[in-house]
Image (tube, rainbow, N blue to C red; front, top):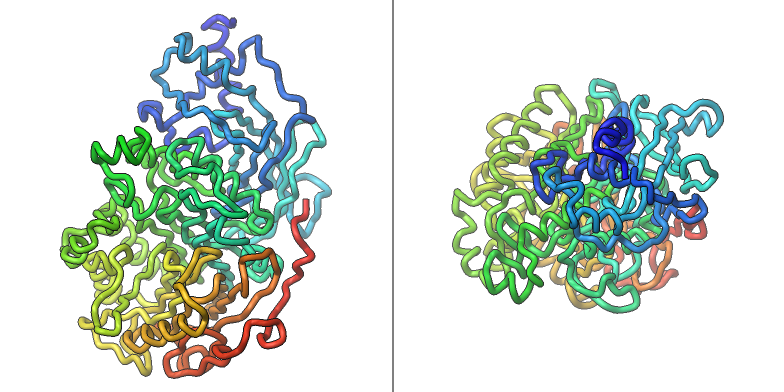
Length: 619
């Protein structure tokens, strides 16, 4: 074994190789955060043992494709996984800086872990092809400590430029698929248009991720926005049964579930060719999470012993966070705050994209199935917070700074439906969305109205239904539902990729959408039958929104149904009238016509659009 003096001399060079992989710093780079951070000196020392035998390139595979995300004007995050097997690492050990290198436990960990794998990566401009010098390149190492994942930041790039990228095992021709990505516009650049494809709620056992593939093959957007519930933590069965076949509690559980979802060809295709900007919802952790627990696991002795296999709430969160940052192409903007996923992107003078966390960051107690009456009673309590004080102040500051820098639009990526929804009797519905935190919503609306912050677009998921509303502070500020006057923006809320919506056939669900639209003056369109996504074309003068649905997720297919189109003119702060041009294909449109409601579901009746389904996954 190397002497301590010899190891110390080699640490700087070897540690630098590990530091190129951002996942060694997540979810915390601080060694005093026990169980949150990895100790690079210990990992480096382990790899320098004379007993180490490197993998041969032929033994390794890029098991889950490639991905990119969180584009900045001069850099983008690149991701892959290279390993001897698709199986995730079974260890549940985190090495902190306080561990004795030569302790018995550490020696066992040394023997159990795999040897480091060296990966090179290259980025080149799409227009210039693969010939010539790469625009950005580097080398990184991975080990089982981070489930053999690789996450690097490609720097030195040009703003608003298309790039290809590829990984290879060092010194070999063992290469990953070629990916494509795009950088963001420069902060003060004049940008004519930014196009977004917006998704949420992808549940693997509920069906095939057809809409991921449809959007990828149409190739009509710049970036992917995923508003959470990227995966689900339950133990659902069926032809696409969840793996592992149990609810998620351990680090191995969460890693395995991430890996299973990334085996879907349509998800791989959308990740391979577009930069993602994601946020998590609750199911990346567990259902209905809040500061101190989840709906099925709370900080009680009974819950700890009976429901959580001796896994506490905090430990479960650590496992979920670690696996998420390992497997997602996302930046960690605050390495001292492992739960922080809220961040922002300045897309030229055109827009500010503000991604918030209304689920896991310091939010007050939510409905857990057995406390709904209590949540109903306290929904108006001014002390309740949806985001926590630190994030809320940051959010309001981002909105104000966006106005001060004269960005045309403020686009808020948010997990849950923001607008108020009343039932047919006029009662407020929903305890786990913004309606369960009335004071948080009121503070947000007050900040917008009082400071004259206009042209706001909220993007929402979670509900597994489509909702399009004017953003209005009903009961406090005047609002004319006929014209939209008095609103402060628009909310576009999308359905799920596969997650189930309301029960019943299309006619039954249609009746429900009519009741909702009739009961809410600001709600302009509602639809709950289809699984799908929506596309935003953000321009200086307007925003065009197109909603799409899949006729069936029971089979893998490439059929794409246009559901509705909407426009918001800059300066109007409400949907353009007539809303949706007066017609939609599905759901209920306030003051308009639904032209497809009574049409049977076959390829002759609907105006289907097939989007090149034969172009599947290209390595």
